[in-house]
Image (cartoon, rainbow over all chains, first blue to last red; front, side, top):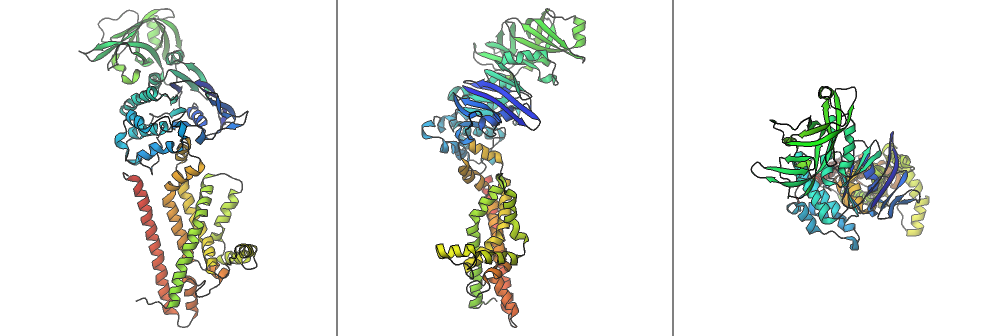
Length: 361
Length: 232
């Protein structure tokens, strides 16, 4: 159990956050400049907040009231930076072993061999960081942090500097690390897909404050109410289970109380619980179950709220049958012409091609 | 072509001894001061920075006279060294090494400080989160990464030490076989009616040593940088 409560002034920006993190992955989610990295720096001991308390399993690493400040090298908190920051003068092997040289003998819980196997970096051991690709560097960086046998692993936007292909390659490795090594992790990101896929618990941060914490669907659901500055960032998370695969067409069928969701990728074994991220711009509303249309996914629900400002767009929150909330964006004109109002029964149509492997987890 | 007399050889040997000793003895302190100036914030930092760089802008004679006042037989530091350790450095080759070290120090510190500043502080942060305390972060991360700059600084200091004249002659005079370096030997020969030949020879040697030092430092730096890019 990790407890974090911090107050810090950074120029004109005020950070005032409080949250807890348990086992598995806790995501710290928010837009750029919200205070995510400042929070991570304070937890790792790279900065010294004016007021606050940080504790792991009841042991204080920072307690300004009791004048406790454990320096970074005694915290045993691993940190993976966005740009890996491997030691350029050391080989991959020595980068990996660096933390082990300093960890107390009785705390070396994580050994080299399983880490190398889990991250698939055995063939890189003799190389220098300068000769590695971005994805390889990041895998080594995760291994390096893990091998210091940390009590907590912080990942500060570890995939942000990578392209889509590399992200898809590393996401399952992070899941593997989560499941195999049992180190609690705080995962910082502004990518909802990554967070929904990896984390069971999300703390949402905005303007230096935590504005919500809970499961991905609970935290991302209420977002439907606001027409944000960036309409492409608005999305919701649905909880579904894998029903089976349609081998003839290469599709995966996901079961949701509100209907079937088709996915144009492999989705894993039947019965597996998955979270699906649906962008509000990919949702179309229909008053009747559609016929003679290419869209295969139609989820039933009722309109919970319609929010429209002075602009051309309206944000519609749909309470799906079975409990999840889905955000949809439509023009005000469409809302008026269809006569949509709160309480109406609707079908939410989602193009299968808009959902890929990144969207589920 | 170059046939040196025993006295001239002595001056060359003494120059090298003085410059090597001065450089090597001041290098650890130079690295420490450079790191402190590059990384730490502390009261009196401006003052330290000024003190380090003062010999660069002060007349060398003034530096030499200050050394004489403090490290001479009657100076406080000189008396302390004499009474406690039995070391006399005034009018001794070790005094020449001290003068050379003081005069080369600003150049050395400057180059090393720049290379420490070029080391990404995030690498030190990374080493810290991996459990390395300050001394280990310095030894395993900052110093190896700043090594090319440390070499450059040492060579600059060495070159300056070789050519040092004003402070040396003021502090330890110009005693053949004890404190007469290439520079002060050339000065002596120029004062003599038939000294042009030996002065010219020593001048060629001085240029050759300086050139060799610069080439050596360039090669060392390249090797250090190459090692980082190649597979181990």
